Length: 343
Ligand code: NAD
Ligand code: UDP
Ligand code: UDP
Image 1: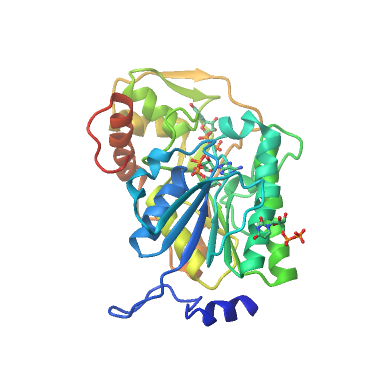
Image 2: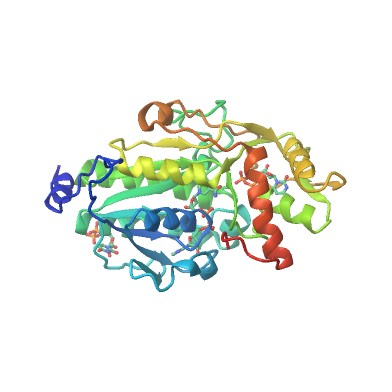
């Protein structure tokens, strides 16, 4: 299609991921929206390492300059303070569109802004992709499945989502973003990719963002009780951030639109997660039960057969291996000990 031809005119093979040793691959210009955030900053590290030029567009709502400070001064790196709800003109080959708060506490803080970010922000980035012929990747979410009636969730499942609930700004926002993405693809021939990301953790998460892994880790380090919401029997499946970044890059470089579930199928109840945190940080950490939040999904676990088959991807870092890596980053940020390169 047109976009493929545009890629080829620039000497870029759109479908190839690995380049044989000794062959020089043309460096790409890539925009990462939300690149100052948790996932985005790890993605930027990989893209810069691989030799590409990266422009981060971020309004710093939940992101931090510190996550990117190690790239300041690199001529292949640029950071723009910009809100994706406003149009922007850039010349790029690929767009990784991550801008959107991900923690329930953050996305419920200003729900109308969350919807605008998901709908108008995504529309602007698709408009940009259309104007310059860039390939566009949307980071959607497992929340599009809502409180799922199918377990584990495969991409073919349409979900069970409350359209008028307190989480709707996020999950309906992402569902609309997926719709826009597919309509730009079908109607205008834009090259698109859709990832449905399941709960992800790792270094650089906001310490007080209210997500369960960051809460438990910070609480255990501060010698506070771990706050388990509800009866603690609800489940989630936790993916380490490096596995996710690998999946996103394979998806962008591959030939399949998706959507693809990107998550770790290892499923834990919140009480089991609390136990792993106790084993990792403090065996004596106490557990305190709190009322659960509204519309909390009861269970969540990805079926990743499609990503395994078509992207050759699966996670490699288990919760017990990944958690200690996050703990050392949190320890340093909470107690101000010497940095180890993650900060
Ligand atoms: P994050 O909050 O750490 O990062 C989001 C980034 O987007 C921040 O840097 C924030 O400042 C920026 N941002 C927010 N609104 C913006 C706007 N209007 N204009 C410009 N920048 C804006 O979250 P994250 O965990 O890194 O998530 C990144 C993406 O992955 C999000 O789209 C999220 O929905 C998706 N996702 C994440 C998870 C997860 O478990 N981390 C799960 C599912 C989906
Ligand atoms: N847009 C943008 N940067 C670009 C091109 C478009 O931010 O380089 C925005 C544009 O302002 C519009 C949206 O993307 O709000 C959708 O653009 P498109 O061209 O698809 O639609 P139109 O402008 O025709 O409504
Ligand atoms: N949760 C909890 N204690 C906390 C924070 C969250 O038990 O301190 C629970 C929450 O009720 C939900 C699960 O952990 O059932 C995952 O919540 P999170 O906000 O991390 O992500 P999401 O709900 O978006 O999957």
